[in-house]
Length: 444
Picture 1 (cartoon, one colour):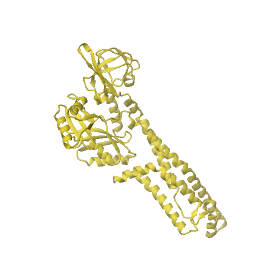
Picture 2 (spheres, helix red, strand yellow):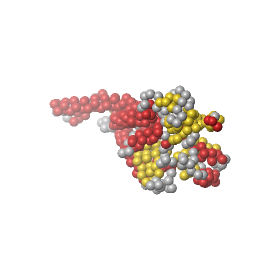
Picture 3 (cartoon, helix red, strand yellow):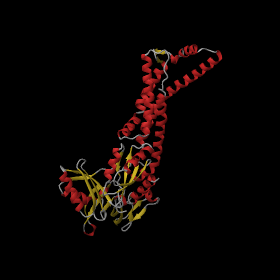
Picture 4 (tube, one colour):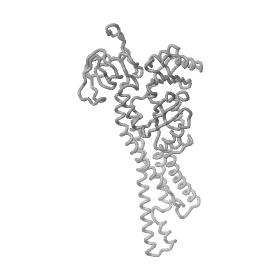
């Protein structure tokens, strides 16, 4: 349908299928959103929406309100160009209206939304009729300064190294304190088993059994109601509860702030209840100067945190391997381009270094030896050999001469080339390959 557009939103902070269901359920209730598909492994949401009712920036804000990180990805729209700009110099609502009304009157601009609070403009345009540099010039002519919102092209959202380090550290901390706790627990189980056998063989009374049990080294009371076993278990449990469970508490608090529950809330509830119950029952026993040591559950939090943090660590290792090929593809993209102005007989009049997002169809781009082609194009001047192996798999360099086509991401080897840009932004071959891989990860 012509009234339905599609955008992709990069989502961070999702840990399980519950997070996915939470985002999908809440966004489906919003006006203007027709469907949403969230991919946990890819960390991405595909949203189909009515542009007359809602725009991608507002969709990302709705996801952020649920406690997740969200940014609109570049390949929004079906063939339309999308531009996010920082606009400086706005002072009131009339400035916003002035920019929006002027841009909407400009041929080729399909949609414009300017936010005074954030100084950002979200613009959708037809690349056949207008380019990003033209849009920026229109805003500058109104007396405002503007620049592109710097987008992360390093594929860092696909790099799970930070999460891997974080959960590995959580696992190691939990394991270091869990092993002694498990050792104490196993020791007590073995001793209780031996006492039970002794009771069966010698027909000991319950008072004698209690006295024998209390004589064990770990059951010795440091203070009335506080045994060595409970004291050591408490000391070993506190660091795990604070350091090993830190990330669980952060995620759980975010979920609860937005009136929802996820896996982290369950983990925090289980470990906190076990710890608080044991701590309180210990204080009560000490206050009452109890002769019998109370039963505590200080062994539960370390064991739970060990197994769950191990699972999270392995999960992010698997995610990293899944996204590795896509990250390598994205890293092939050039970040800047040299645009030149030609005079009669292709005489070079001037050249300018610009962000690759500002390259428009029909621009003349200069590519020096060793440089990456920023866009798909056609050679208009120069001869060279080009390495296209990373894109096409062709092992041998390919000869390029006037009239030859070049692919974004391939590497120029010997001579300088002047090319005319034919496909820019999300329309380049490399961007299309990346988009296909991302869609394959998103589809269920």
